[in-house]
Length: 238
Image 1 (spheres, one colour):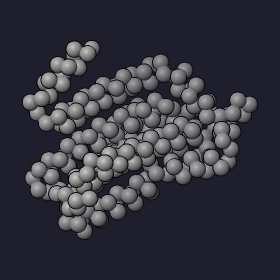
Image 2 (tube, helix red, strand yellow):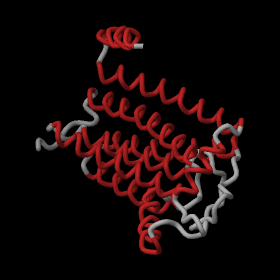
Image 3 (spheres, one colour):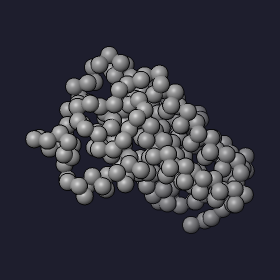
Image 4 (cartoon, helix red, strand yellow):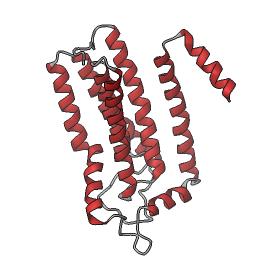
C-alpha cells in the first residue's frame, strides 16, 4: 500500500499537486459513496445505523435525546444551517456579494454548485428511496427519503464551495485554512445534528458528506480555472 501511494504521488508530479489531490478526492469519494450505497441496499449497514441512532437517546426512553431540552433546541438550530431556508439565504447573499464585487463568473459558480447539489440530492433520494429511521421518534419533521442526507450534502456543497471561492480572494495560508476549517466545521455539525434528531442514519450523513465533498471539489477546480483566466482574482491581500 505504501509503495502504491508513493507511485501515485510520483504520477502527480507532472501536474499541479492540488489538481492531482482533487482527482484523488473525486475518485476516492466516488468509490466510498458506491460502497455505502451497496451496504445500504443490501441491508448490511442496518445494525450499525440503528446502534448509532440509539446512542443519542436515553436508555429507558427512546423519545428522550441525551442532553435534555436545551441541547435539543441547540441541535435544531445547528441543523437549520443545512436547511433550504438558510442555504438559500447564504447562497443569495454570497451571489449578491460577488456580483457587487464584479465577479459574475464566481457568482454563477456558487449558484450552479448549490442548485446542482439540490438536484443531485433529490435525484438520488428518489432513486434509493430509503425510509427514514424508525428505531427512535423523530425530534423534527422530515418527509423525503433518507439516503443520502440532503442537509449534509447541501451543507458540504454550499459552505465548501463558498469557502473555496473565498480562498481565491486571500493570499495568506492561515486565512485559507481558517476559511476551509469553518466550512468543514459547519458541515460536520449539520450532519451530526441529523443523526441526533433521529431523522437520518449515519450512513445517510456519510453519503451526503461524500457527495458534497466531491461536488465542492469539482467546483473548487472550476474556481481555480476561473482565477487563472482572470475571472476570479484576489482582491484583498490580508
